[in-house]
Amino acid sequence: MSVRVRAPGKVNLSLAVGRRQPDGYHPLATVFQAVSLVEEVVATPAERVTVSVTGPQAHLVPTDATNLAARAARLLAEVAGVDDGVHLTIHKDVPVAGGMAGGSADAAAALVACDALWGTGLPREELARLAGELGSDVPFALHGQTAVGRGRGHLLSPVLSRGEYHWAVGLRATGLATPAVYAAFDEVVGGVAPEEPEVDEALLRALLAGDAAAVGAALSNDLQHAALELAPELAETLAVAEDAGALGVVVSGSGPTVVALARDAAHAGAIGRAWTAAHVVDGVRHAVGPVPGARVLGAQAGAGRR
Ligand code: C5P
Image (cartoon, rainbow, N blue to C red):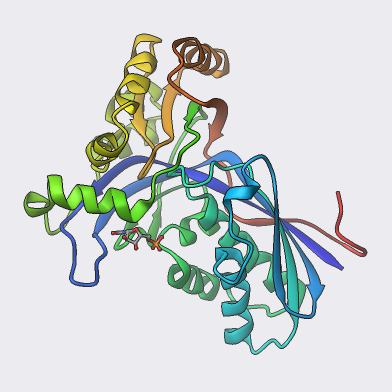
């Protein structure tokens, strides 16, 4: 018996960041959209909890006990009183250390896969609580679609969103560490950041109306300045997308991935080609959102191969 689960990466359509709290975290008011760059996790019975990773960036991901999917499996086993182990095969499609929550998607997928494999039958709210313990972005990878995130980003409320959004996704070979970007944020704007950041109402109205141009105009990211301090070359990536007629362009989360909102799939392709021609990215993807959160694709007897 093996269980295959898919979980999405995300873009932050808006990311308002407040002042650093005593626990080191920053209060957020963000609008997440789940996109079609997805992680797949196959869970197979095993003696212990082990992990292997496939995909072009697999060598960048730890396969020891620190792997977030392995931590998710161990946490679920502990809470549900399960003695079994599991082998998790992670196929990575979301850029590693890119600001699109690929590791969080692995953790969400591992929770759902192990829950099904072990038949723990935990309610979805309990899985969401465990997800929040594992990382700030893990609950959204479970939730998917479009949602407002408050607190550390883990307190979610769904957002009504019409239409389909096409993104050109500009990849960088060298990732940015999220804590380093938040530290740069503290240095640059820390003292004047608000206690309680607010969600952009214009963005929510644009999503409700399905008005892509208005969504593009409302894209925002309070971490962008900090990401640009650490990776100044991203300024050019933003500029090239603007010149290519992007409806809006923004650094995704803590970066360094840049996402440009396009009119349609063909326009997303054109923005990607403009980036490639200008040599301002190391790779280009096309993504569509919103898409569902972590869900079982299938369970099958045997070794769990495709
Ligand atoms: O929650 P997670 O482990 O994904 O967060 C990684 C790091 O990002 C934290 O250690 C912290 O430095 C930073 N962070 C933050 N405020 C948040 C979310 C993350 O400062 N709301």
